[in-house]
Image 1 (cartoon, protein in one colour):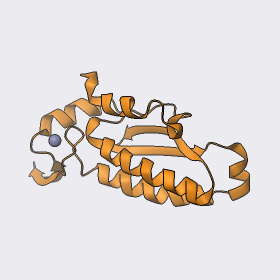
Image 2 (image 1 turned 180 degrees about the vertical axis):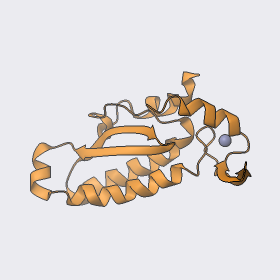
Image 3 (image 1 turned 60 degrees about the vertical axis):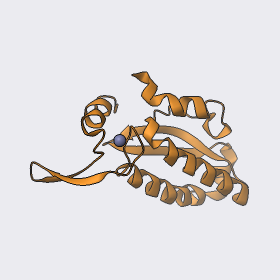
Length: 138
Ligand SMILES: [Zn+2]
């Protein structure tokens, strides 16, 4: 069962942008979103001659929640919050997309009306997804 988080742990355990990250529990289905962000952040750091890395990645309110920080202390004084706010825009896009992405298989979810409520679900993992990961949110 713990295999559901295995992908991210194996992939980024030694990655420089994760060296100060206190936790990155990302279900396998969302690892593609993290991959996209890592590549984007790498480029951003190079272009702006700074080093912003991950502080924590978790699931909150059934969404991906990502915190970043300056890995070099003086950079915050030097740049203020400019870079952090640029990066948070990209993060917000990624996190919003996590809502529509199945945590198990990474497929885009389908809109479905359940008990008169519109929900986005993966038809292959409807039950799997909701029961399993909600418990582990905190
Ligand atoms: Zn699925």
